[in-house]
Image (cartoon, rainbow, N blue to C red):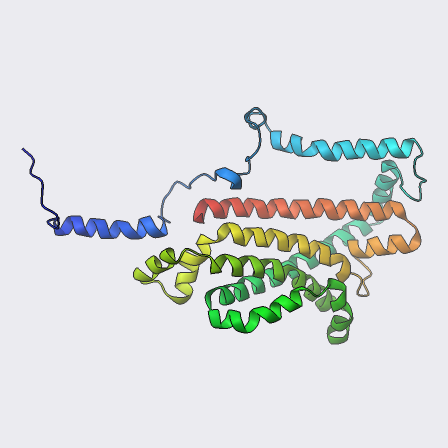
Length: 303
């Protein structure tokens, strides 16, 4: 016949098991072998009908509908002669311009140098944004001291930095990568700073109760709590990096998609101009998709 123990009469072993379970409950069990599936709005299949999910490549097929419709519309408009070839060249002429640049060995060089500049600038800008956003998000003194100034610099247009960077760094790669880094910095800084300011105080106090302080508290408790916001900032920063690329390649460039864009405009080559725009869109989407893969892995681990 079982006997009910009075309140406060738990054994020492039971008390120890209760206390050891608290860190896992509050901070999450990071050693779990089975990652939790990403569900809800962060799921890659969110909003996709169940019938489409059962079709191999269903999301890709749905995503391809609008580009194919736009391509068909473009072909129909040019075939009907609504615009002159100078205003809007046919898809065939844009493709021919791309083949011509490829055969001359220039297309790969334009793509490679632009991707290199974007990735370098994105890495520098996002890293600085993550670091400074963390400092200001955790320190009220640093936030009061620096945030007004950073907010003012955020309002400066990208082209306004060009003459100053040329004066300081010359016309070489440093000035181009720096301009792209400036564009990538602010979205990450804003996302991390805002997210850390709104982390649940009880979660932070629980981390401190288990001996986490300073950098260890940031890496173990606070940053994992804001992973979705961090990756939102990173994806915006990557898009900004591609936007700032065109402005960066105005700085005495002889290669790159931004250079191809402006050079085609100056020479009246609308076919190459459209080719540069399409390549920028494709490369931007590819890099965003790759970052999305990293985001989903991070969400399974931390969120």
